[in-house]
Image (cartoon, rainbow, N blue to C red; front, top):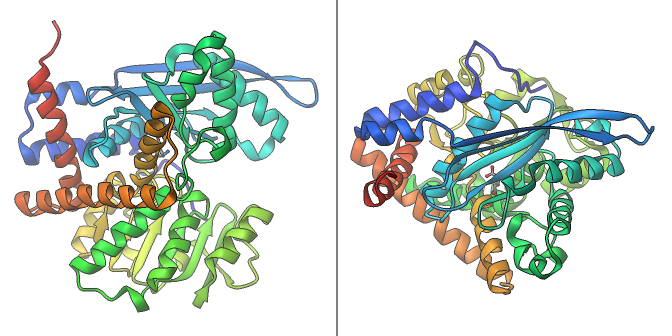
Length: 425
Ligand code: GLU
């Protein structure tokens, strides 16, 4: 089973700092800008009570960390998970800043969450928890200030509850112009077509571009995916029409493999009904090491942080790691992938499809428009491949790895803005 544990003493935020330092050194980033970007701007921690179905009250801790808003309003998801803590949320908020900068969308970076195991609560309890969390955040979020979205264990329904709670706290005259306070909403509540699959779609566009660059034939390729939630399942489903066969999948319930191919639509359906991949009839169970050693061309980690490490990176036999998750590779893992000449499409580029279509949703809400799916997909493709081109060019210019190159692209953009605007006062 995969592990989301902290390990080897390096926390997720320490990974971000190490990645940032490496890029800052590589490009010779101005020391003043470096100081600003090395710190988060605001960190909100809230403790709030929720009434359980039993009538008892339980206290929860929620977070919203805002890293930087030089390029636009703070933007980023909310996750519900037992491992959510200030260190993790800081890291995730910082990655959001880089992500939006790389694909050139006018957002800053933020992230939040509640430390909890959502599988232990009923729908009614999760609704009360979400509404109380939104109430506790109050004006720390806002449609032109900080815009949450789904992340691990949250979805369109979670966003609908936050929207409704936020609007209920506004004067009636203001409600209709604040629908863009969250993105990733249900279509009926102001969501965008194509948002649900957007992260997976972006991953598929990146992999397609990589295959062209490498003259690698995708039509007989194989992949395996870690995490079969929104991101992992959509990536597997959208890679299939390109010819890529899913041969293994893993999540918190276990791992399954079938070298002749797993039907990703059937597996997604099974996960919806059973809560995990374990026991899927179209494949055989494998252990965690067996899963990571799967013989395939592409690995898509789409679960939690720190999965590709000193211990696990040597097991991979793939040509490409396409990071659907945020922070799946730690510093040692990165070094080993490079030594072993495994290509990497780094998280802050590869999984940016989600926030890109969040931006489209936000724009549609502001303009009272609704775009058709073809338009959303075409615009997403253009944006993410624009980021891909800039990262490839920076990797060539600085003769560096793709993660560092992605940081260089983001840091350059932020550097330009700070230089133009200056620092107050
Ligand atoms: N949670 C997603 C991410 O990590 C989406 C964020 C958003 O759409 O704001 O990129």
